[in-house]
Image 1 (tube, rainbow, N blue to C red):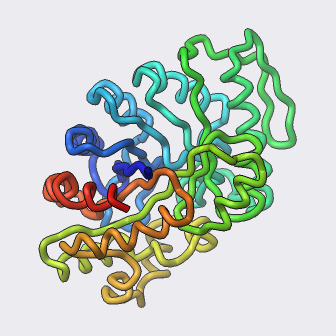
Image 2 (image 1 turned 135 degrees about the vertical axis):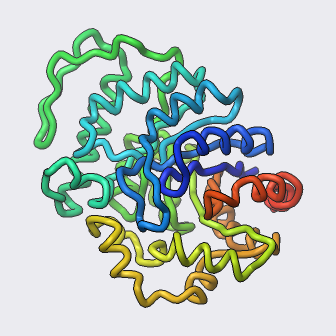
Length: 322
């Protein structure tokens, strides 16, 4: 059976609301949660971008059972991988073993802010592979960990506070190279597209039997027109595709790239409105592609309360019948 999760979308809600919303998601019966880790929102209309790791610490203390996961953290430019390992170990302790570390090659949107150049995709994948090795090495708990790589060095590092349960590492995939890295070195596949071939490549590289986590954005509202308008306002960037989304440097770039995207275009791409079956059909491809977990994004910070009640009574039961 597929598990269904709730997304803390840091770009659309302030930090304190994200924690409150997660408490409600736990009460509503969601199976797990994920959180985005951004320095900037995609669009100015979203209006937020709190520090995900502080929010995770608060969420770990404010909830009791719901698992937590970054979706995803880039451990290469804005954060050094040794620091990511320390943060992940700390959250695992605070959450009582409920945390998974989702990693990815990142977006220019978030990484250029520290004043370093944005590498080409091949170099980004090299950097991610080294970062995974460093993080995994530090999780082993050696008294002195050293690493010499093409992109990163680590000198005499040690995690002084290690959790009893090792932090599982998830790796975001989009093609053969990332699927191979995830299968060989990761514990979890992470993807935002319901492509069966990603699962197959992950399995062939050593991922067979490991969890596969997908994510899909929806816009629940009793008024479908209002849902479409909200999805257009905040999520019209979604259809640009990952090759574009990874390289644009900030909200003005996404504004320009989406200036001709119409509300009806977004309404065709994302499920919007009150029809449970429409949302189920949007989520079904992930289940059929072999994903074991699907995280849902409810678009709109001020729509979370209504979404929780509807999800508990209608959406989650319908999804669990798939």
